Image 1 (cartoon, one colour):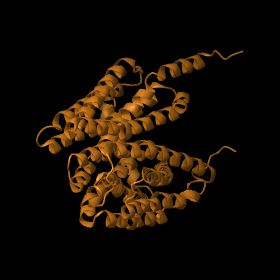
Image 2 (cartoon, rainbow, N blue to C red):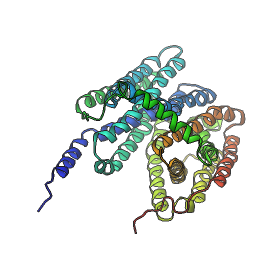
Image 3 (cartoon, helix red, strand yellow):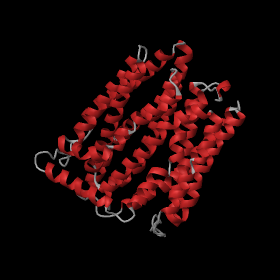
Image 4 (cartoon, rainbow, N blue to C red):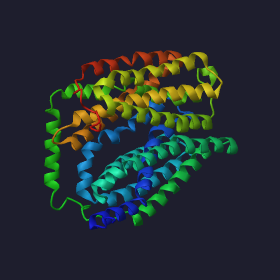
Amino acid sequence: MADTSPELTTTSAQRRKAWSWIPSLYFAEGIPYVLVMSMSVIMYKKLGISNVDIALYTSWLYLPWVIKPIWSPFVDIIRTKRFWIVTMQLVIGAAMAGVALTLPGPDFFRWSLVFFWLMAFSSATHDIAADGFYMLAIDDSNQAWFVGIRSTFYRLSMITGQGLLVMLAGQLEVGLDDLPLAWSITMGITAGMYLVFMLWHRFILPRPATDRSSRDDRSVSVLSGFVETFTSFFSKKGVWVTILFILFYRFSEAQLVKMAQPFMLDPVELGGLGLTTSEVGFIYGTIGVLFLTLGGLLGGFVAARQGLKFWLWPMVIAINVPNAVYLLLSLTQPESLWILNASVAIEQFGYGFGFTAFMLYMIYAAEGEHKTAHFALLTGFMALGMMIPGMFSGWIQEMLGYQQFFVWILIATIPGFAVAALVEIDPEFGKSTEE
């Protein structure tokens, strides 16, 4: 006989309901991050902004994610997580519309950056609320069941932002022969999409009783608890080695990621590869995301078998050594899209595989009484480790040229190897408990 207990019935009904909002929520979570961190770089490059300014100002957009752990207690205190989700989707859509409206006008770079910063701050706040709401709106068994679903739709948002939207802008560039208008229309379409998200989630998100503001009864305890967890984090044994690892493990990648797409877009006579916007969108938004995902999946699989300590050095090598493909591309400047796709696939697969060690180590370093809060603090350091190197990458590239810049990128892998040699990891950490 089938089990018709109230608990099972509630879980099944909750799961059916969750299909109506979890996929759309995590798709909506990923798009603004991709627009701020990746699509903005391509857009500004096509609109004639220098590599120095692109790297400096788009790297500053990491700041909301750097301070997210500090801001998150106030999200709990001020209003419900449901309120923040709906409101931030509205603000994100308005910021996208602001970018769309400013691009065709004078002084577009300054004003569009203002709206991108608003989008970044709203997106970071949306992340806090969405992840918290996910844990409140469904029970533990459904949380585990939907982990893969939310991850899949977040990846789909990356394909949409880095791939489909960039390819759309590229097609509009050709069809309209007007670059600012092409990107303005693309951003306008995305803004309309967020209006739909906001309206959908306004009506479809559940209203769990546990989702309530803590300002009336727990604001003091929330803030004091934050101070306690912050203090306990810096009291951990080896915390400064942990911070160095988080800041420098991706030191090379943080610089490469800001200049890879400008390198693809710059004309051959300037040392670039002379690709179109649509071609770059396809390479990074589809092939790149696919192999990034495959690398991550393989990394998780092998780490579960032998543990993080066993795979740390292969993963350090994987995230750093494939950066050499960009040096080879700058030396040969191939015209074959097959070669370019294969090169990016190798680099992104290595990055996905090597990033597994980074994420697992953050989980390992966060272990303890306040592991959720400590992990949030580590993600702030992670964003800082991407922001600061990215800020000066454009200046280095313009000073050296692309070939010498990619030589520097290989030299910049040394800190990643050095910090990996400093960390101590339990040999059993990360191993699956299943036989």
